[in-house]
Image (cartoon, rainbow, N blue to C red):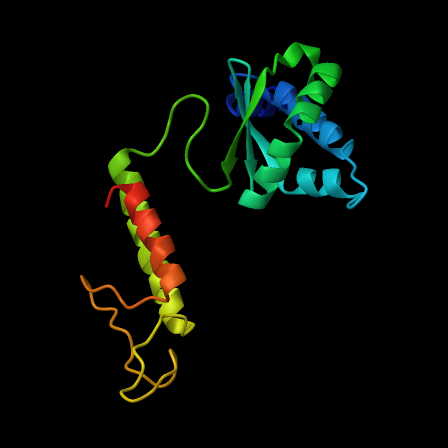
Length: 185
């Protein structure tokens, strides 16, 4: 029975490693992160370990997934510490650098990734969801009623019909324009 279980787990691998090697990689990752301490947050390493996981190891690149961009930023700030710890505790792993991705996103060290069209479609759908959320939260700028000097008030509801952009607050309009420019839209 154990050979069947080992065979199944050998198919689940990190960079071609078997389950036993993958388990060691996860354990070393956690051990290194638990060594991180800061004066402002003594639990920083434990928090990083709880919110990140090793996904892939190939050609010296350890791909790590985190559940929020903030955790990725903290991991990047501690990158040298983590690399030193990995080389100290797991010399045989051969980790030369770290790469990060957000949990739930496709992509790994072996080359699977979104095409340009898929990425554009995802970005456009996200933009539509964010505009809808802004409208629901009443954060979209509304035209002032005639004769009024204030920028808010009980003006006309913004239009969210397809093909028509709602009027946005100036700072949101600037951010949206920058996003569209970066996307090439």
